[in-house]
Length: 159
Image (cartoon, rainbow, N blue to C red):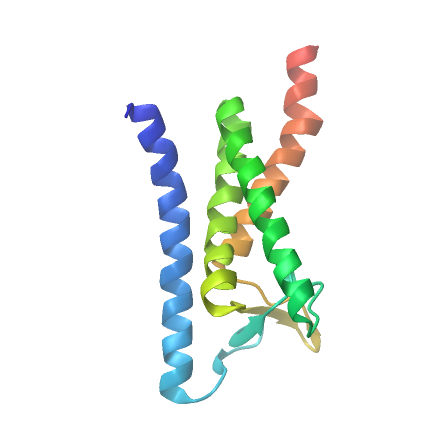
């Protein structure tokens, strides 16, 4: 394989492994302390929540068929993103690599654990943002980069 392809796979593997290691650590600490609240501070809590929905706990329903449908839909989207990775270059490709690496991390959990462990809980007072994980961070960063690319970089190249 060329260095170019190896570099792309290395990015995906680093994202996937950083997500897996962080989830493994939080889940093992949860089992060790028998508490989902592992760390609490003024603005950040590490609290384990098992998410059966999509990103940030959206579309969480207690229905097996809907969960299976969502999982199949996520697999299809991941395949499309994988194809898009090889059709694009530069900044857009790296954005798609971040999304794909994060999607693989969450997809792994959906398939093997039937839920995704989320644990990063930012809050100010009683206002809590959605609880998320490392894979969600990369997915979100990748989407933000794609939006930036579409709004600013493509227009700059066309002018």
